Length: 409
Image 1 (cartoon, rainbow, N blue to C red):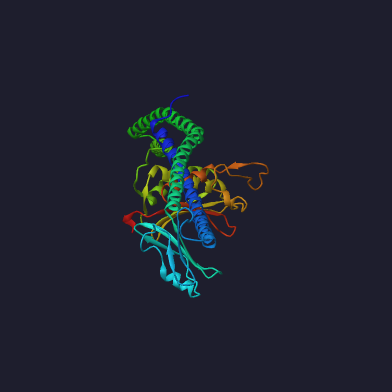
Image 2: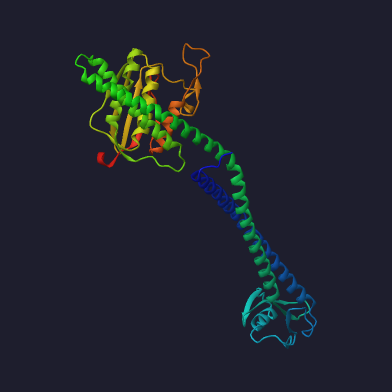
């Protein structure tokens, strides 16, 4: 298998990296959502555990000398005497809450910070008349919570990296067959273009020599001279189309962007299609006014207009008309024929590659709509579009719309 060109390999790598980044982003969103849920559950469980510890300490407290681990007690008996667990930092006990509870109040559980240490304080009057305030040092709880959060963060970050790497690897594997197919297609187009360029050059050269001899011959038939002029012109256009096809096949190449006069382009297309239209008995007309300019590739736009004209001539009964005009900031080209119109069942997929249908009177014959698909691709590459205009069953009108070049604004 021949190696892929550097441009295609670069595009494949970029696509694989984009897939990896997208996978990492999706995994990141999932991790963030799950982490948020886990944090909420964790904090709720810790608060419930702290509340249980405080309540248990309040119920079981007999004296302040031997509280549970990490716990401090404040007791007030019926006489009003207050005792405090030794070692409790000053300012931690809430004696106001003790007095409030002793008087029959219901002070809330609060969190207090003293010397950068967090405490949870709960106060309650027991049925035996003793008021108990349980104070829990939250250092251990916070340390455990922080460890869990750090572990979750590290795990999530590792998951993102793994997801990104796996997405890039899977993307590369998934894109490899497609990239190989595109590379094969590009090589085919490049080889075909190379093989066609030489005979086209020879054809153009011979046509120019023939034209030169006819011009020197006083007795040459003017119609023959005109036909030879057409051959020379068509050979030049074929060479330009070939170059445009080669550029279109290059994934990293860019078509030339130049100001194109659609009016002149349509004149050329109508002139080139006149012979075929005459053979079919079709009157091919052009309705233009002032010059209409757009920006893009003249060769590519000529291909699109030629495809529309060819499609109209093949399906017309007697008349085909190409109209060029400006509507606001849009250049509009309408190609209208008076044929039997388009099958409504085919209309939604008319611009798909290889869309098929059967022509009236030709049961079982299938025709492939590749030309219209190419028109749609060229229009999209020029920031425009092509559409089938509703003609109420009277023939068919295809409308090509393109942005107007600044000189038309």
